[in-house]
Structure formats: structure tokens, C-alpha cells
Length: 134
Image (cartoon, rainbow, N blue to C red; front, side):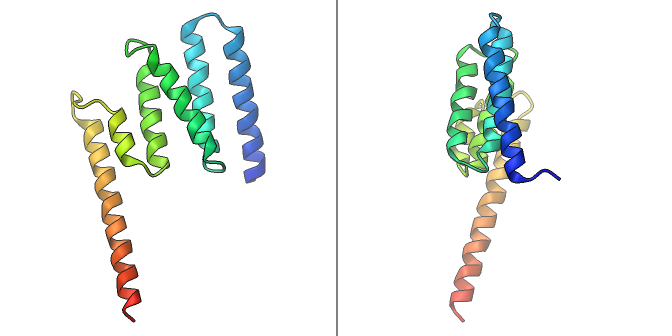
């Protein structure tokens, strides 16, 4: 079983590897691929240190700056949205998604996540109020 310390160490090694590879590759497509991998690792590290979420967000946004025609745009967009959700910021996550999708699947998923979160928050608050009454 991997310990949290070992997991952090491995994720940091992966981040270093992605960064080094990015510096050695002149192809923008490969640079975006490595930046995407680094962002995923940073997001995982965010569970241990929330500042890593900010680094992941910066990398996802950097990839998206190259435009929606790139192969990495949609994965970066989804990664950005997921990172905001992990941070407890569903409103920011919703802003990263297109207003309309062909099938509506992504928006439906986000709406479902928001509804679940709101329902959970309401039930938690109601439970706290009823316990306070005793």
C-alpha cells in the first residue's frame, strides 16, 4: 500500500519529469501533453496542499489559451472544471463548461452534481439544527 508521503513523493517526481520533458520538446502539441500530465499530478497533490490546486488551474488555463482546436483543449477544460469541484467551487466549475453541449451531457452532469451538493448541504444543516434543539 502506498503511504501519503510516498504518494506525494511520486507525484512530485512525475511533475518534475513532465516539466523537464516540456523544456526539451519544441513541438507545441507535446508541450501541451506534458503540461496536461503535470496539471493532473498537481491536482492530485492538491488533496495534501491546496496551493497545488492553483498550480493545476494555471496549467489547465495555459493549455486552453492555445485554443479549442488543439487536442488538449477539452481534457484541460474538463480538468479545470474537476479541479474547481474538488476545491468546493461548483460555480467556478460551471463557468469553465460550454453553455451548450451537443448532447447536453456535460451540463446535465454538472447540474446533477450541483443538486447533489445542495441537497447534501441542506440535509447537513437540517441535521445540525435538529441536534441543536436537543
